Amino acid sequence: MSDAGTTEPTSLVVPEIVPPAERPDPEVLEAAFELIISGRQASSSQAELLRSMLATVWELGREGTSTGDLKIADAALAEMAEAFRVFRPYRSVRKVTMFGSARTKPADPVYLLAKDLAAAIAAAGWMVVTGAGPGIMAAGSEGAGRDHAFGVNIRLPGEQGANPFIAQDPKLVEMRYFFTRKLMLLKESHGYAVLPGGFGTQDECYELLTLLQTGKAEPAPVVLVETPGGTYWHGWKRFLEEQAIAPGWVSPDDVALFRVANSVEEAANEILGFYANYQSCRWVGDLLVLRVLTTPSKAELADLNRRFADIIASGSIRPVAPLPPERSSNDALDLARVALRFDRYHFGRLRMLIDALNECTG
Image 1 (cartoon, one colour):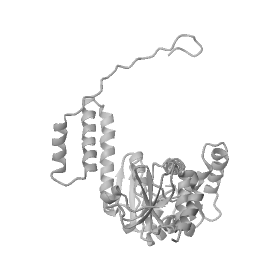
Image 2: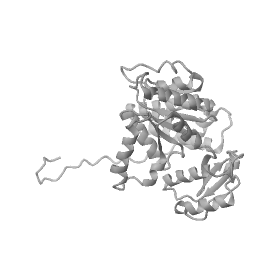
Image 3: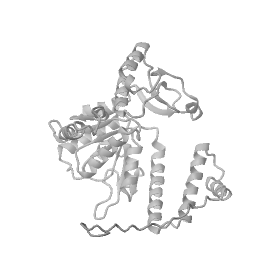
Image 4: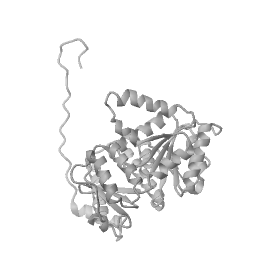
């Protein structure tokens, strides 16, 4: 490139045009697929995805992917596979992930608050997931107790391994990459508690809120927790309102995606109360199906349709029976349902709708 201030044209290097990789031989893929499943039953969706993964590996080999890139792909897939194996037996148990500073000392009131919150969540039958390190992570593991704790540890040079409350536990996963670790900390949980922390905590909090704001994560409670009289999250919220919401970069409705709490009781009520009536959701075609314990009454449905007309693309919020794709996968068939054509954009308002559903008594 020419020096700044000259009028010489910039020299561009035109990359070599590489033809698309040949598609793998279907017979070869099918033979590999049959060898992998070894006669075990696989659903049509599982079979399709496994064949797709085999095709991706085939293309990586055919394209001459560098050793470094192959190492990343191999390690990431291996780490995810191990984490899936560890979490699989506990998929039916609700979990809360706790984030916060690794530098928080055991005598710090924030540590004690985190420990007590984890104990309260565990007492409600939930499990607690942490990053398995010191500080708030240790507080979460200690408060939950080993039987109710998971750890997803990151291996860092010069740092100790997992904290003593989760070390050597079969529910501990060790990971090399932050992105695979963060995926598992977010993917496996049904609620999130974020306590004060540094860059890592802020990174985790912002990514979590971004996933919820864009609908890339299923709706879930997020509670930002600090001690009575604390200013960390209140100051953060003030910054958000003044520097991001006021200029229009964040919608005011998106504040509904989180709550600030200053006590164990407040935080626990926010997490547990999210599932007071609402249980889960699923897209079926263009319908968003919300599964609930109690169907709203006609009067409650009329009120919901009036209050949330702005996020209904067409039609109305209405009760439905389990839809064919739900029945075919035996997906929560014991629960009642309401469905709507959600606009797929205003997820802060969707959180408000879930809050309203939790107030319905039928």
